[in-house]
Every structure is written in structure tokens, then in C-alpha cells.
Length: 352
Ligand SMILES: CC(C)(COP(=O)(O)OP(=O)(O)OC[C@H]1O[C@@H](n2cnc3c(N)ncnc32)[C@H](O)[C@@H]1OP(=O)(O)O)[C@@H](O)C(=O)NCCC(=O)NCCS
Image (cartoon, rainbow, N blue to C red; front, top):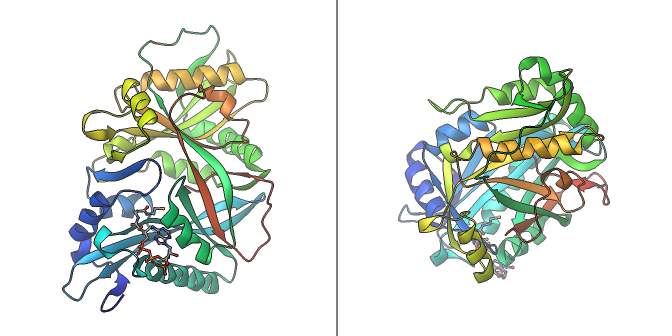
């Protein structure tokens, strides 16, 4: 760490921070870097304004490390709570094992502590770690009070064939009038989770109109209704490839063959994933929920290569996608720092 300074990102660092982001791949079993199509800081300011970036700089002025923390609200064991999500930790390969990641993480944890002091209530620090990321896991072991859970991250290829129309079911984008029902259903779904996104009516309403510069219509919430117009299931889709895509640098050989043949990874290792989020269905409407999922895979076929779900392996919502187990997938685990007792057996979902 000699001579390396860790400090908050300034506007003049943007290009150097971005170059680092595009160069340093995640160290998990699927090694990928992010390529941005819109100015990254503008995207962060629009989508996650309560975010801060820390960088590590050499005496020569080179940016060799960067990491982010973003604050938000989520549900912990049925109650609203605050989190600080530590993400996008990257250190240039030539500068590793010198304590730079450790210093940037301490800097971010200080920020979480300060936020806790300002608010006068618990702010949980949380990070996600991909399977196989030894360095990141070792880093998290230093600060986390709990590391666990297994969430499958599964890109499901788009459909090439239109799903059969089903009499009585209509798939359509949700409108403002639907949001109370959707928020109620999501609250019900997440009430037994140890951690879950907070998606109340006001939040959903804001999410539907999120934009980054000229990129509008980024987020859509799809619902399926019955003949009487009753909502049977819902699913959010983020048109992320309009903002960024992933460049896969390495993945296990068998996974690579499968991912290529399914069209999940295109030439140059490019993956264009659309996150599928905030899914729910009425207990008696699994078939309608599956129809909604298949319809989404068809209607977004020109937007990217896959719809990607991130779900706790124990979460019954996986029945909605009925994705075959042989589809390539990876998994993430959660690292948490909290001074409140954790509901160890509860289901997990990542915050927004
Ligand atoms: C993860 C990463 C940021 C670590 O950066 P770093 O500056 O080398 O980490 P540090 O030097 O601060 O390491 C702190 C401790 O973590 C552990 N650690 C770091 N890298 C490790 C590795 N490759 N294997 C095992 N332990 C490791 C060690 O205990 C280390 O302390 P030590 O060097 O005294 O033994 C870096 O490897 C990286 O950029 N990886 C690619 C991007 C990535 O995967 N980011 C995480 C996304 S969740």
C-alpha cells in the first residue's frame, strides 16, 4: 500500500475508473467485465443516486482500484430496513495482494457506520460474491458477521417460437392502477424472507419511469390477468443491454459449450442479459405465471440474449420459470455485517 491513496472518486477520475472496470473481470467461476454504452456516472446518478465510489491512486496518479457502495431500503424479516451494498470491487492485477481492496472496503464500511450514526438506526452492510471468487470471499471474511445462502444466477435464453395463446389469459404491461395490487402481492411474498427488496407502491411507480439520459422505458412490469381482469402473476424486466453488456473472459469449459450453443454468449464473449425481477404469482396461478414468463422470453427476444433470474435455491418462485437444471448457471452467496440478529433460516433475495 506504500504511497497508494484511497479517496472518493472525483469527476476527473471517471474515464480511468471506467477503464479499470472494463479491464478487471469478476474473479468468480464466470469471469466477466462490464462494457458501458452510456456514461456510467450518469447512469448511477439516475438509477442509484445514493451511491459513492472510492478509488485507489498511485503516487503517479494512476487509478489502480475502485469500489462502490450504494444505500437503499430493503425488507429484513418483514420490516423496512436500511442497507449499504458494497459492490464493483476491482483492483488492477499488477497491484493485488497489497491491501488495496482491504483499504477500499474499510473506507466504504466507515461510510456505512457514518450513515448508521446519522440515521440513528441499523444499516446492514451487504455484498454478493460469485461462486469461485476466493479473493473476494477472503476479503469479505474480514468484515462480515455472516456469510451464507446460495442464490442461483441463471440466464434463460429467449424463445424462438411464440408461446401458444391461452384463452382467458392476457399478458400486458402494468399500469399505475395495478401498482397497489402488485405491491401488496410482493409484500406478502417477501414477508417470510430474511432479506428482500422493498417494492412498495411509491417505489414501483418511480422504478417504472426511471431513465438514463435519452434511454427511457428501461424498466417494465408485466402482468398476466384472467377474463375478469384480475392479476394472476407479475414480473419486472430491466432492459439492461441498452445501458451495458457483459464481456465474458472465462468460464468452465462445459458451461462455455452449452452457453455458446444456446446463444447465451455471442462472439467476443458478449452476453446481453435482461434481469427478471420482483416475480410473484397467486398460489392458484402457477400455470398463468409460467405463461407470463414464456411470453416475456418471446417479447424481449430482440432486446438481448437472455432473461436472467437470481433466486434463492430454496425459493418456490423457481417453479414459475421451470428452467431445466442443465441450463448453465452460476451462484452467489451473501456477505452481511449487522448488529441485529439474522433470521438464519429465512429466504434471501438481493436488494435493488
Ligand atoms: C478481489 C480483489 C479486489 C482483491 O484485491 P486485493 O487488493 O488483491 O486484496 P487485498 O490485498 O486487500 O487482500 C486482502 C486479503 O484478502 C485475501 N486475499 C486477497 N486475494 C486473495 C486471493 N487471490 N486468494 C486468497 N486470498 C486472497 C488475503 O487474506 C489478503 O490478505 P493478505 O494478502 O495479507 O494475505 C481482486 O482480487 C480483484 O480485483 N479481483 C477481480 C475483481 C473481483 O472479483 N472483484 C470482486 C467482485 S465481488
